[in-house]
Length: 186
Image (cartoon, rainbow, N blue to C red; front, top):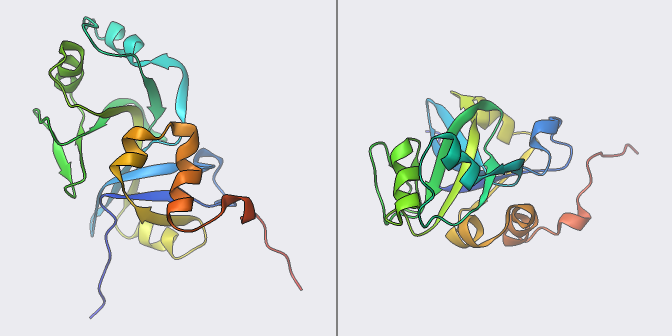
């Protein structure tokens, strides 16, 4: 019997030479992974020129006490759909617990709660997601494109987006300075 390891609650780190420029230096928080497929939210890059306050303004949600924060490039799928990865101290209409490590919400109630000062204590906002059909991620993991590492809330909430890739690799004992995109032949 083959034991399948699912990656919910872990991070996927794009390795040099992944072959898809959309995932160059990507860090993906895996929010769901099972036999039917996988969904992750990119947390390694931010959307330039767009902030959390801008999103609140677009939805006509008063900013209240909400701090401003970057909006992350969550992935290439549904880039106009927003997601909030957050601490487990708050739950709303569609909140999903992610392996007991963090939670994921995708409706406006979480934005309103953050703006009102009654939302989760820690949060990351993203537009879009990365998705894989059944078996697709497992096939990609068999190649050299991805490395999975343990998902820590420190890396998610206390590390700035530009540092997450190197921090994730370091947590696995990998020095990113030693990685190369191409291999040679002898």
